[in-house]
Length: 259
Image (cartoon, rainbow, N blue to C red; front, side):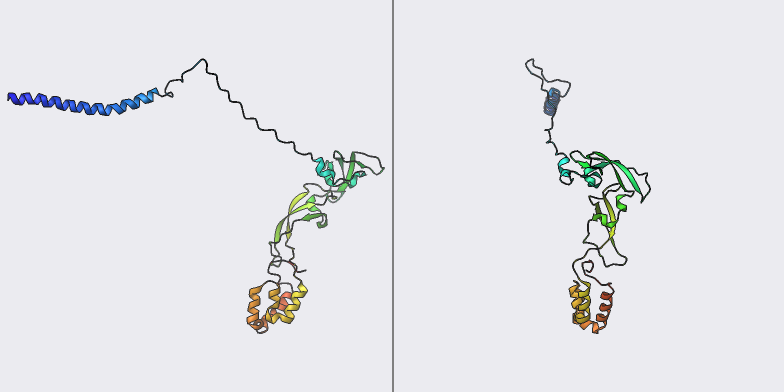
């Protein structure tokens, strides 16, 4: 019994020693992490200050001065005749105080002033800057088709039922004066042409329609091959095409108008 009692405290001390070593090994990395975190400058500590250190002041970024844009006088000076009558100057050469309380379609007078660098005269021949301009009271989009030019579309079908329209950008001619914006949008009928002649298409349909010459001329090669290999649909297809081309129902494949 004495031997067993002597062995037990020895084993107990060895076991405690082993457990202590394990605990120390576990606590060592934890203490290093805590020490590193507390020693970092972002936890309640300010960076060391030195008397010799000078504060750094960041100046705001100043954008480089842009080059001066050219004046508008150079753009309109070449279009404005010098010494002519003021009421005949293009709209780009004058500034007018237009108002919209006039009666539509009736003449109305507006006060205008020639732009800087533009010299004009009144009916008496006297040079003057301020003058009165008499025009018809109507907006620019209400003008006659001959008084403005519009962009033409080459992607819409002109031979269609009902006729198709496209969005065009229109601009008033220089010598025409009107109310509102001089550049406006307008929906117009497709009216462009690809150079195909109606008379040529009709002549080919009458003479060589059985071989599909009319369809080939109009760019419809699939229908042309069909007429060629069927001998004009035994004459029936040829007769129908003569009537359709004569009535203008069948047109060029690109959707343009005849000339």
